[in-house]
Length: 357
Image 1: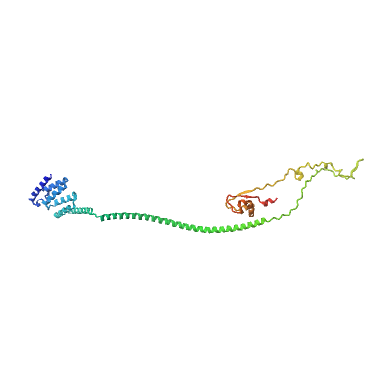
Image 2: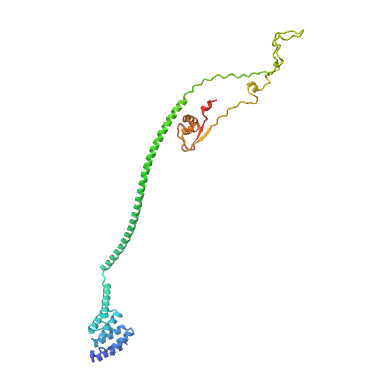
């Protein structure tokens, strides 16, 4: 096959050399080289097609059609933008009034762009690589900075909201503190007043204790008549005795002037020992002597707000009875008037009431 090609090409060259180029301008498809190029291109033999196009241009270099077909072949299939630009430019020079001139210029720009990309890839230096790496690094850092800035802005917004909320709370706290200060001053005045009254009450209680401690003067009592258990003889209805000198004396009776011998028999029948104790004591029958009930000891459980003075007034009706409570609860109080809630105190009977009959 290669030998056949080698023989065909020189023969075609000799045949074409005998003819002029002008005979095939506009008639390119009648030339055997052009026909061979079209056949190879249609079958995918792009290199052979380019070779036949080049042979044709050697015979007829002023054919714009051949330059266009060869330029498109280099640009689209053989990746040779340099030769594609050359043949596109030759096409424009040979056919200045071509309706496809604008498209051909675009094809030239596309080929130039491809050359630039090839040169950039081929001759890319280490500095360029470092520059790209630095640019990528800078872009990454910039993206991180933007993200961090957005995060800081969000946090600042949240902090501003928290500060505003805290400011409102502080204002409210200041108002409450002012109210508490006024109330504490009023409470302090009330406490001082209560302390003053408590001291006055304690002084009065001590004075009353002193007065109660003084011995009471015994009152002069009239002597009561002594009760004698006399036994009275039952009274019997008797006639008043007639004087002896007036009574008739029976004849032969002896007269006597002794009144004892002449007492009635009813007096002798009175028996003292037979009478009841009530009768002996001079009380009516069925009446017994009443025994006063024994006073009971009361136990008081201390509640909130209780003091010895209040408890004394409650059970004895006077604050001076604190002395009685202290004496009865000596072991519990241990010399102090401080009371605990739940503490049990003994409330003895009022001695002043026990003295009275």
